[in-house]
Structures are given as C-alpha cells and as structure tokens.
Length: 349
Ligand code: ATP
Ligand code: MG
Ligand code: MG
Image (tube, rainbow, N blue to C red; front, side, top):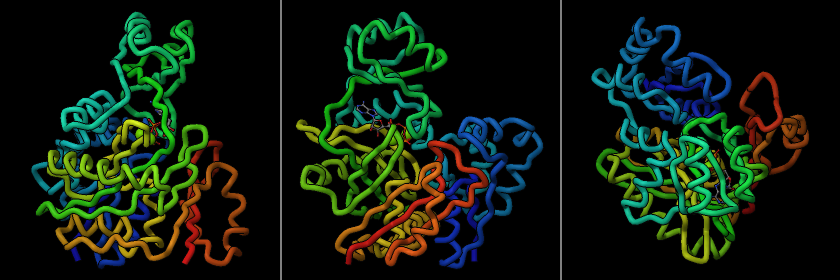
C-alpha cells in the first residue's frame, strides 16, 4: 500500500482518510495547527515549517500529497513540489485562493458570474458601488469560508461601515444574484482526463453556511446542471486537475451563474458517502492514486445531508436512534456557534 499525504487536519481530511484506508492506503496528515482557516494557513509558514524541512520530511514519507483546505500557502507546496506529486496540483489552488482570479478564470472559459469589481480602498468601494449598485456583497478575496469575511450592502451609504467590517482587506464587491436555487457540481478527474460527476445537489444555506444538500435536485437545477457541468469540466481540463473539484452555482433565469470553486472535496458532496455508489472521497483517492473512477450513480431515490452546526450536534443521540439516519461526527472538542460539528445523511429508498 502506498502512502497518501494530506495537508490539513479537518473533517474533509478525516473522511478522505476513511476512504483511503478502505482501499488499503496509508495516510499521513500534516496539520500544523487546528483552528480557524487563517490560523492554520499561517501556521504552515510560521514556526519555520518550511525552513526546518518538516514539510519536506513529511513529503518524503508520501507517494502522493493532496490537500483538504484551499488556503494551504503556495510556498508550502512549492517546498515539496519537486519531491512528490501534488494532486489536484497547484494551478487550481492558486486560482481558487483568490475570488477575483476564480471569477476571471471562469469568465474566460465562457462562464457567467455576478458583476464584480476588485476593491482595495474605501474610494474603490464607493466607485464599485456606483458601478454595480446595491444590493451587493463585499467579500474578502481570500480566506473566506462559511460566509465569514462577507458583508451585505443594501444602500450606497453603507460603504464605510462595510469597509470597516472587512477590516480593509483586499476585497471584491459582487452584485447580488437573483437566484431560484443554489447548487453545486462535483467532478472527479483522473490523470488521463477521465471524468465523473454526481447528481448536482440543491444546496440550502442558513446565515451563509450550508445547511442542507438534497438530491435529486428540483427541475430548475436539473435543467441547468448540464451547462454547469460542462463549465466544471473546462475548469478541470484547463488546470490539468486530478481529484475532486467543486463549483458552486446559482440557478437563475439567465442560466447557471458561477459563485466560487473549491479545489477539493466539498461539504455539498457528503451525501455521496451513503447516497452514491462511489463517494466523493473515494473518487478523490482513486483519482490521485491513478485508479479508475467508480460509478457515481445514486444508491437511493433521494438523499439529503443535514449539517450539524454548533449546538445541533447535541442532538446526536436522537440521530443515532433514528432508523436510516447516517450520523457523522467530526470529533471537534468544542462546539461553537456556526462551527460544523458533523452531519446526518438520510436516504429514501
Ligand atoms: P463556503 O463555505 O461555501 O466556502 P464562502 O464564505 O466562500 O462560503 P460564498 O459561497 O461566496 O461564501 O457565499 C455564501 C453564501 O452567500 C452563498 O452560498 C449564497 O447563499 C450567498 N451569496 C454569496 N454571494 C452571493 C451573491 N453574489 N448573490 C447572492 N447570494 C450570494
Ligand atoms: Mg468559499
Ligand atoms: Mg460557497
């Protein structure tokens, strides 16, 4: 059995590890610190990880390295890139780390995005509001997740307040998209360009955080999923992607509007563990290890994943007792409001 290295120690890495173990692989996790994304990202470059060759020593023990969060510093990958294959690779990561880059990249490939403008000062924010209008959303260009680092603008006079809310960090102003539904495309791509995709889930958010993912999705999504999939395939091909890639979309009257991408397995794909013949985690492992991809067919008529956020997790005994509910707990020591603590998947056969 070969050894897979995973950069990052969160729940996505845990679930990747389970899938890898099932296929007989060993797992080495490199997780300098647990905590918010910012802390983890900076921990990779702090404390001399690069200088002390710890990362290189880690890479030496791995046959392939993957990452489970998109804020791995590029410098960390550069330090090991000549020693071990890194999959999905650096290109998609570099693009996905910066909201303006991912939107420009997708536009060049023919995708739709919300109107947007880069904002690096209050004056630029005022100019962007004049151009894009309100309602709109100001987001930091990097490090944001679960709706963190975002502020909604309902009127032009909220500029100063919004700029303060993002602490003056390099940001992007996006026009608010009128959508009927949100969905995502998860695509697995092997080293030879073979691709597989799952049914596109309908994703419902609460306060900027994913709450539910449901398949099959309603008609409004099903009608737009093919076009969205073609775009995802272009992104995967253009970045010579190997592994699972996720693109988030809004279903609108004008067709699918790209929101953002994640160069990794994704929360909206957790239902695939029980709800698909091959899970997103297993197909990621298969892809990065050069194995053929597995079937992505549904195993049930319907599947729904519910996130357990913050205190939701306290209801775990209830979920354990519920017939047909598949409970996943992430083993985090403390629950905080807004923190993803686990999820439950329910199938309708
Ligand atoms: P994630 O945890 O998915 O990485 P994130 O912090 O990167 O979240 P986004 O996905 O950009 O944030 O936004 C979170 C949610 O906010 C979206 O799923 C959507 O519900 C809403 N949203 C974001 N941008 C827009 C927009 N331009 N128009 C309308 N709604 C939006
Ligand atoms: Mg995001
Ligand atoms: Mg998102």
